[in-house]
Image 1 (cartoon, helix red, strand yellow):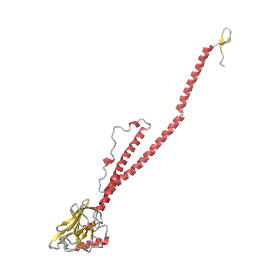
Image 2 (cartoon, helix red, strand yellow):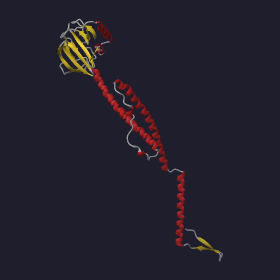
Image 3 (tube, rainbow, N blue to C red):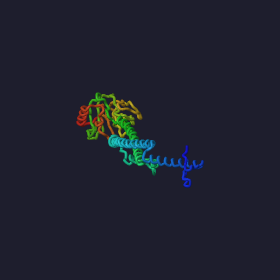
Length: 322
């Protein structure tokens, strides 16, 4: 029930009831409602100014969690970069040195990204500086990891090629240690058995019985299997990587030109063909067309004592058999 209003009448010296009517009552109600709304808005704004809403508190907690995650992420990035740099150092200073390959240039490893601004879309975010800095670090780290991955692909190919090279290098004796008789002549200046003059001997003469198996000293391809003046029956094998071996004065062939051979495979038989004063094998090792001392390549099938004994014998022989 609405309040009753009175007005003082000075003539009658009494209060008289005022009839405001419907319009007055409506206006009065509107005033009360408007004043209440204004007070409510002022109160709410004041509360929101001094106190956080539940939604604001939730967003603030989420923001703090994101900041903490970015801080931890940056720490992880630093640790990963340390590991990656250690891998890069090993790659450049160990693996590539072993395989005689040039290290990757720092300009390639540290090259940046192209473009004016790859991170413009992040500039509108809260804590944009932190987000952009982390994104740059992750992009750079990803690029460096990709380059390192490709480098290890190269190292893998070099490893496979190294195994192939190791199998190709002449590394065993062409005659089994139990089958050859002695070293009649080593590498270097020797007295020629027929001309009786000092002549440089480009290989090693190993004596034995006619028909003794002769072995390929490394993987390769037969590039010659025929008679040749002086050498008699001769086999030449190309091993790749600049290596070639010669087997001369044979009694017979077990291979033909163009045939691929493996280390330890029988390629022919010891003999006395060509210019020779007795059954023996003349064996040569050539690297880039330069003759090398075969003794330096007998490291796969003889002991250290046998090698020392062989070196002593070879250095004391003064006359070749061819």
